[in-house]
Image 1 (tube, one colour):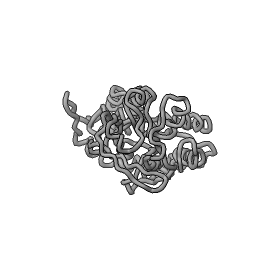
Image 2 (cartoon, rainbow, N blue to C red):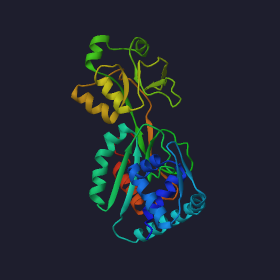
Image 3 (cartoon, rainbow, N blue to C red):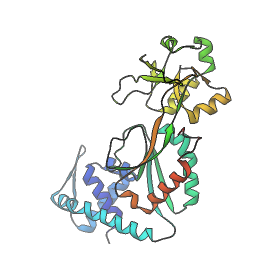
Image 4 (cartoon, rainbow, N blue to C red):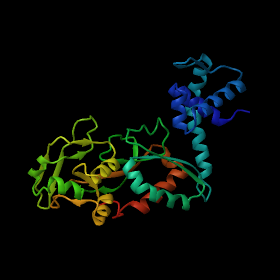
Length: 303
């Protein structure tokens, strides 16, 4: 009998032409993917791939099989989701991705609550700073920061993450506390780079609507907000720290607010799903839970 998990492994290897990449997407070891392909080839009495030490190529039989599988597997998923939706208790797998800082600060608290409410849903959370292909890597949902550029995604806006300019007490004792925006010129800044790798400009605003653009090149950059916060706490310089972390660290005295009359505009946070995944019972339950638990949560968001 042919195992559908082996068929899915074949589809993923055939699409990516890589056993390692297929294993990462499926959440299993490369050796497990290889065993799946071997079982499937044995059951079908045909070779599906030509393998060398450097590359993987589909055989004629493999190409013919792959060409028919995409629509079939999608249809099978729809049938399974339809059957599961008739159950009073959503079940299945939920594959999520988010940025490292947001995942550590928010999702590590949110997901245990969801898991307790839905014990039949298995959750896989991937925290990363790299761009993620939700469809190609088979993610059910993602938390995205900033403007959304993919119009094919189904999005729910959750709120705005505000930031506060902060530094460690030891840094300010060593370098002095800036009193005006112009005094930032003499300080070490820590910031995320732009997507193109160039330094990111800070646009500061005050309560009267005045605006100030800071063009100083950061002394340190990182693509992870959690790393930036920790470096600042260890005296690296001044950074715009997300308020869900900044407020608690300021109250503990490990960070000090700098230029309190100025702020960096907040960043929108959205829950996004590839089209079609919103029909999955597990994804639908998660989206509903997130909207009820997160939207308007003033501890994590500013609006």
